[in-house]
Figure 1 (cartoon, one colour):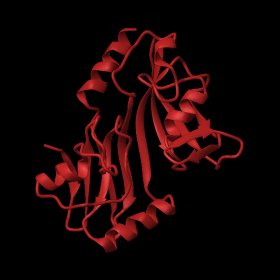
Figure 2 (tube, rainbow, N blue to C red; figure 1 turned 135 degrees about the horizontal axis):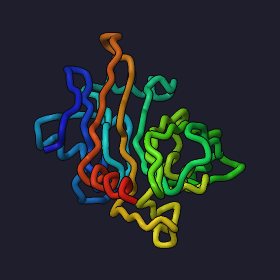
Figure 3 (cartoon, rainbow, N blue to C red; figure 1 turned 90 degrees about the horizontal axis):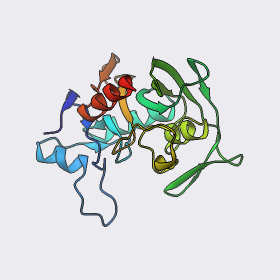
Figure 4 (cartoon, rainbow, N blue to C red; figure 1 turned 180 degrees about the vertical axis):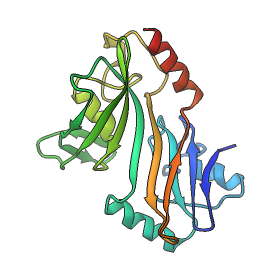
Length: 216
């Protein structure tokens, strides 16, 4: 069962497990979050998505009018997205911003002077022996932004294989997937005008990873 973190007649927030696509890929017969929710009787329309490896809160609309309203909130950057991450090494400052421009090229992205303005804010939650647990807020929403910014800063996320070679990391801590979790969503409900705050608890695999990180 896919955990439902919030639901009403207009929208739904689901807790996506790692390893599951948010939406089906063209020609791909793998299971996806939309299909799994349909099996549970929840008919939803995608508004945004998470990478296959990333777990956590995903927002869906239940009707086209709500979808348009939510997409407008995303475009206006009025939906606050907060992530939990475990990065290699100790960051020089406990809080700050990464501002590396990102060039999106189809399904790929890279840091480039030709790219778009991209801002990621981070705050240290725990400074651990060889890693740092971070709270991360996206100011902009480029493809793979957090993963790219963390790797380019010299602090790739634990388990990162797309933008850093994990086998060459000086940190011995290993993870089967990238240590990134969509932790919180905060937004004003487009129909009621009330603030909604949804929190997705840290999944068991990342909780176990954090425990190992604390032991060094």
